[in-house]
Length: 366
Ligand SMILES: [Mg+2]
Image (cartoon, rainbow, N blue to C red; front, side, top):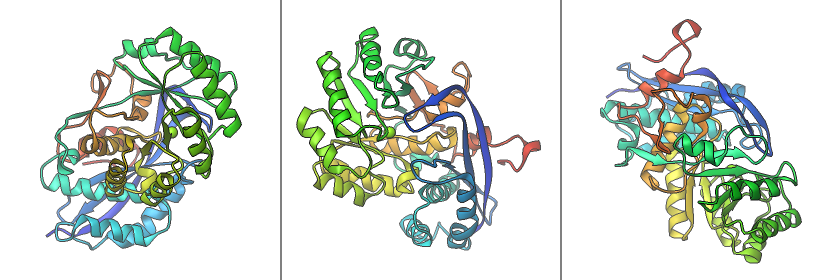
């Protein structure tokens, strides 16, 4: 019996080796909050909550307040060895509205604590047998230092292209595809288009012979009817991201005929158990599942990768976030051969130790 005795946070700031640009923002640093849950035996589990103003509305300050307030109150004193993890997740969910990233980080840290107590990795604890998961790398249509060719040399076979900032993005996608036409093209507009501009863009790309594997979130999150109309017009798979936070959002999207695939992110759905539920419902509805992440460090991506390893290790995943803050030639990088390799060490402690600040910069991992 080992009750949870403490929940603490550390601020994580990591510089990207290449700025990350989407229709919503330009990012040069990864800023997030690491969460540590500790039990009476002194064993710790770890999770990460990303600051994502434009998708989840969470800031580092709001995450820290939420963790220190209602989530700590819900968790401290519980004995997760004696309590189904579903109950722990429900308790966290009942303690606060929204705050999905904060809730996910605390839930992940609790699951990670259990994994570490069991002497196994988080992925194995969740039932995954795979030791790595496939991932693409997301690049901007405009101005990225990385192209499919340079990424192929770095070991990545697949890219996802961010579009929507500029009407010229359509021509850029066509040019990127023509320079390396080996694969169907994945694009993500992050809600930047309306039905008319999305129609024009998709028409132009298809007309230029670009095979679209999927179009991710072309329209605003609320516009399920518009996404359904795009599916009808082109038969190109639509992947919903910002439209689907919860399993209830997924059900509404399916009922509206608005989607072929769903992008599951822990900070949206508020935890691994909720992510698994969405994946199960999506599969039952015949939808494809992508596991993605926000801009996070290796700690948060490891938790998302553990989910991906359970759901479909060789599927279409988007887990490159931490690659942007790890030098590609770092011998310790988890990114090798176009895959994210899960740490075999028990729990995420080893990964957390690499992500957390140095001892003289603040509190650290054990
Ligand atoms: Mg997206």
